[in-house]
Image 1 (tube, rainbow, N blue to C red):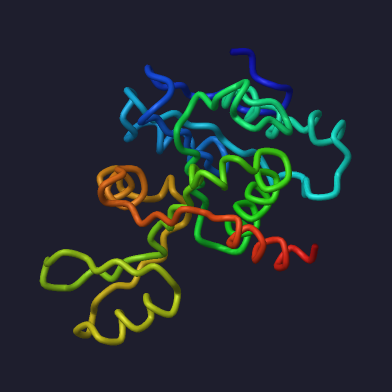
Image 2 (image 1 turned 90 degrees about the horizontal axis):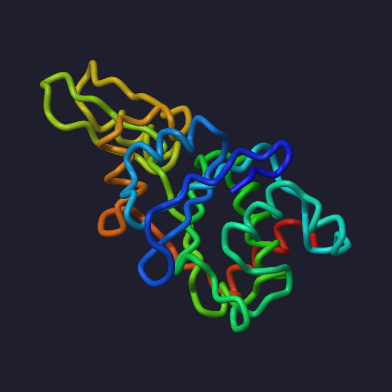
Length: 211
């Protein structure tokens, strides 16, 4: 597949259809990290470069010409406004795996807004998931297993509850995660923290975007 101008190419998986999933991540470093630990049989990866367009009110031509949305539409095999009937999506699930900071949350919200307007059938069928990566970890001094935190408040609370000398470490993006930790907490379907996005979720996100 030829990449769209300014858009990193799709990292495909071997299969299509039932059981497959397409990860959307922020940037090529995150895409590389996820691609190294994903299961090549059923997990594909597409990187988002920068914040996407707010597609809720943008005209069709502008959305269609947006590098990331064009690449996503091509990867899914679904045209803008498609209902998944004439052109079934090539992947069963779309997995949004963004950094757990303000920029990542905003990027995820903008992708959901695009899906709500232009591919709502994916939300109707609960084919879209948001995965929450760990925010950081507290490493004990006794060599025991680090404790993971999923928010800044949780990281500070864990650090305060641990013995003196425990080190609190904030993860700086997916690429900073140890490969085994990334696979377990973000990529493997059985162990990642995932939430299926509904139309009700999309409605809340649209309010947050000011629409």
